[in-house]
Amino acid sequence: MRKLRTLCGLVALALACLAQTRPVNDAEVEQIHRSMLLIDTHNDITSQKETAYDIGKNKHDGHTNVTALKEGGVGAQFFAVYVDSSYVKDNHSANRTLQMIDTVRHDIVERYPNDFVLATTADDIERIHKQGKIAALMGIEGGHAIEDSLRLLRDYHDLGIRYMTLTHTNTNSWADSSGDAEKAGVEHHNGLTPFGKQVVREMNRLGMMIDISHTADKTFWDALETSKAPIIASHSSCRALCNVPRNMTDEMIAALGKKGGVMQINFNCGFLSEKSAAASKNVEAGMLANLGANPGAISEDTLIEEYRKKVAPATLADVVAHIDHAVKIGGIDAVGIGSDFDGVFCTPTGLEDVSKFPNLTRALIEKGYSAADIRKIYGGNTLRVMRAVEAEARREQSAAASN
Ligand SMILES: [Zn+2]
Image (cartoon, rainbow, N blue to C red):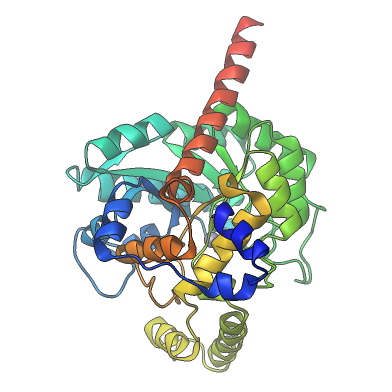
């Protein structure tokens, strides 16, 4: 990659050079792709499982099933333990969290023991991958899941949770979200409260990755400063290429990389392409207006269908552009993959579901990335962060024990 760029500079044909792709054949793509340990840090199939979705059955209405995961060469999957903000109202966040954890442990891992093994460490992932199975991991989406209790945070860690996004689209009582900055009536905290910083420190002590996807920018900066271990953005893309609050600014990407962290690129059309983002905003506004006028008259399926018809999909080239930009700003060690499959209505052309990862490998090779670079992006960087987080936990726990 670097060599190619130097060459571009030297011949002063940067644009022509960037557009150039190197020819690759199927055998090379296959060989390189199968040699990878691909770790996807965010998949929302767990939310579909609420409606009795069976991950072992091949269906065409989702992005994820066992066969497709194998076709796509996915080695490790972080399943999102997604806790919608609506659970805050009646104090059901912990209930929901436990149900989602059961979905992964019971409905996925226990039900398909020949395909999945539960993993909680980087070593687990490598061992399970060598066995030819898929490592299943869990990350909580939405810090309100802990119901403001470090005890619950510890319980979730015991059950196998290895990352938590500090917020979802809602600001909770200790961290600001990027999703409601303009919303009237929301009590914001200018980032993390003192208790929010305590949550970060306890996550360090436990060995749980701090995930800043969905948080407000100030929450990111507070978390980065507070955490003794590198942090992640499990499913976020680049704001310089698609200006939405869910994406990371160049300044954030550089600072994250400098502290050894990783941002895992999100495949949601609305985070990859501004055209898709604008279309999706319009469709959403239309949907909300429809619901307001006649709530319940339109089924969710119809709304999703409408969305898919009207939102121009992003492309595989957009995904490569985001990876490339993140590498340029944060360094090759700061970038990973966090697809958000089954958490979004629109996925890029050429990267429609989990089976299509080999297309991304081809596109990255064509762009000039070496197998070693792709290995880092696909999983090496995430494994490195996991090991750093595990080491920090060991250090803190042994220091406490010797006191
Ligand atoms: Zn999300």
